[in-house]
Length: 418
Figure 1 (spheres, helix red, strand yellow):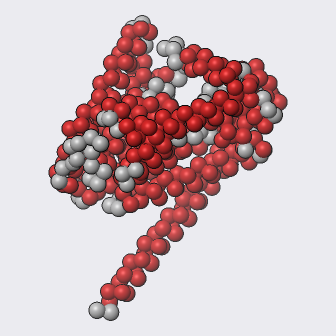
Figure 2 (cartoon, one colour; figure 1 turned 180 degrees about the vertical axis):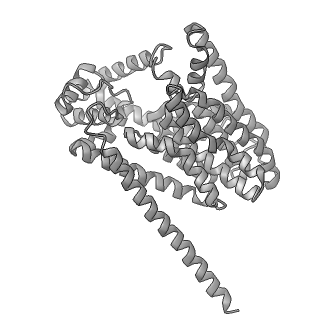
């Protein structure tokens, strides 16, 4: 009988030792990565989106709020910060998002770059910690698969100084709230991700089609607050400039060089048919693809029911996230970092349902393929990452195929729609 407490203490010590080892290795890897990224900042042609973010933060610091979307004003600030050689990438994000970079502008740029990346790594760790109760079955192989799947998007996010990790945290917060049946809070968490509205709006459409009005209310409420913040920040003139900017960026001719590098429906259609079909036909094909893909999770949710306690719910949420990634109008490689949520939930399900055997690794196959495919397309196929869409679609099918099996394991779902 005395062996039981000793065994429990030994198990706790082993778990604690594993966490300490993981934390030390993660900190060491983060330090090496940031050091490597810093080495490139002295290159004037080194592209980083944080330059545009830092520029708009500097504009707020100098009370140039009304000129945030004026190209000449942005370029003048860039010239004062880095000289006339800097790239002409301008700030195109929502007005309220610029508040994130106001504080960074009080630091030297190199210090701001390090501080921003460190903050993002901490937030990523927090997001993974929040998911820990829903990933109890992950083993070493699953963790390595997850790390490999998101490695390229993570490096791209940190390299560019992008804010995708904030969106990951927003989605994780929404998932945790939904699992705890707090639908308004889940909507508010998704609303906090409206700085990347091209990802959040498809989710809004899915939940609206499911008549989950509490979730929709949370998104709309936070969106209204952020809209008022934007109005107070840049005024009506700034809002009009931003709307005009969005209108220009939403055309089929916007970002001609970037569209083939988008691993979504838009990029895939472009790499297949650009130059063979006219812009109107490309838009028609993209619209049809978006309609079909967005209908997929809606029909699955309606067929399986709404049961936050079941494992099928985790897979349905994962399918919705993957579909929103594929249907996002503007998506670069860093946007694939959102796949960390469905990847983790799928790998946990696979580890529990198939402790051994080929079936488990068949589910993991699209995730394992993401890394080598990204490297190959980047180096050998002129960065035509639109060809990644079939791999992401494979991941969606893998998730969808397991939903009925997961539902049987948990005894069905709630058929009613609250």
